[in-house]
Image (cartoon, rainbow, N blue to C red):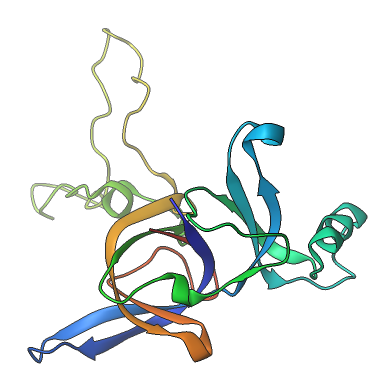
Length: 205
């Protein structure tokens, strides 16, 4: 699947032709620079390695600087491989947001917001005990029983419990592209995208 690397700018809403208010996410998509070309002869598969968002020379390693120098570009913060590009690209070529067409559907992957240590009600949607009557005290959001007693005398693996929530890779499929703004490298898609503002996302056709 071909695609681009982008940065989540934030959310907005636009009106469609029927006057319906549509929630949308604005993404800065590209321009991405081709930093490496994978070929069947050398690597055993065909792919393009794309880089996005410049990195300062001070925070770059010599290996990163040498890799970018081959492509004639600056060191990039985010580097991702994509397969499925129909056209032939060379080192140093730029791929812009015009790679996408208004009306088509894309898949967007990103890292969800980290929410820290959360209880079972927020993390798994438990209902709690439901009522504050019948002698309940500070038990409204408790997990309740987590297993039987003498048998099996242990808690089964995979039991839904409190724990760290968020900070995971999430892939949202079939988001419609509403607008492409080439002069500002912006992509407007319907719906929400995982991650906080200014987080990197991967957009695939």
